[in-house]
Image 1 (tube, rainbow over the protein chains, first blue to last red):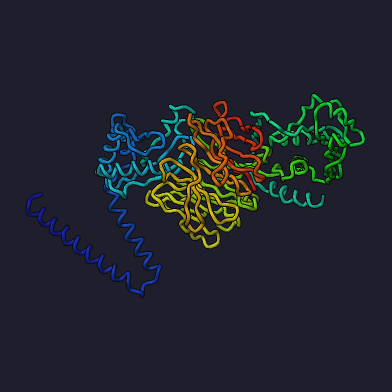
Image 2 (cartoon, rainbow over the protein chains, first blue to last red; image 1 turned 30 degrees about the horizontal axis):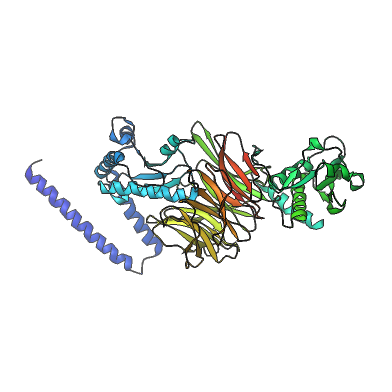
Length: 185
Length: 430
């Protein structure tokens, strides 16, 4: 592509953006119009949502491609669990590199979404542990955002002590259960 | 007599309506002894019919009384005679065995059902303290045994028994990594368990409605915690709390019209009250800490909850309108999962002992009389019996998750377990 045609393409792209901006403004004005029915407004909303998804689709990895990255033991993304001390939601120093790798991946793939699951060991109050699990998941999310991922890419959920990784009843099992898991779906 | 049968009928009918029958009976084990308990003998009921006695009612009654920790039933092997009516009793024999009270009875067929008669006798005076006869349906002998146990308990202790009540709990089965959670309802003695919900995702925190007809609980079937209410009899269920963040810790207000729940917003976990009619929520606590697992005082005007606002989790009390928060627990650095006695005078909790073991403890609402009830280990989820005389909880025994009961009188403890399943999150019905 020569320089001249590049400029032409850029100009077209710019015009498209301007037009899109105008369209948005128009739509916003239309939204205020009481003449439109709820169904019409909803349909408009759906159209916009659909288009947005279409554009986003280009920048996320294909299923099998992602699978490979997650399962390749040499890939930094193959490690997706961080661990916590008892009754603590502080990220340990040794887990920082794991979170940095995922944050970098998420920053490179802005349309990739993940869920951070917070878990606790089985001791004490299940309900308190559910809240503690969320606190851990949020700590993981905050770290990921700090290292470059964006807020909207990360959903948090807590399982508390309800879904143990290890079913034993000893310090080794407990320490394996106090964890945050990064789930790519 | 009529009244008792009327009480039995809806209960039996309700049980029959339950959708799925559980197979695994709970295995009961007595782990603690009784002290200063009333010595009593429950003589096997005479069976006036063909074949085997359809239900060993005396054994059910005997086990109930022993489990309460307030009775010390004499072992059958010690019996010198097995009378079935007062006229046949040789009281000196029983006095010599150190027994204060004697229970006798007989069962006979009556159409498709049975006629059951029992007597409670004072061994010293030879007088009858209680005695009735019942006509019941063919499958009601076990339930009737619980009713009779309650009558004996009340006649001798002056307060109602809690044997004719039920427990709800969650089991988890792990088959080569494939997990299945179940919500079950059983008799208070662990018998007749029936599954009312099965899920491939976790279930937790069952809570009985004050009328005993519904259970609120937390289900992760949507891959996050949401609160459901299920009619125990019909199996009909309804999702009642599915806000963004955590939805958990349901507890019914005493009038059954409101449900306190825990919600998290922006990382802040607080107690809310959900109006069951309008489905509107109102925030009760508001702090950056974890505030969760609220339970209602019997007058419905205040709640107890767990908060880590002072560092570790401790128990607090708050008025239902969110005012007047004050701390209740001060022993050690971990107290959680409050359960209030039906008279509103005591609170049971999970307490982390100085040796790191989690035990069940109880204290008065005014902060006095803190005492640890169990040796501890991994005890959690305490739930008071409807008569306030026992606490049901989840624990570990021999490497397995089991349910335990502990008496507030003496130190009688029992465990209930099923083979191959973890059993947790018990809740005793009203």
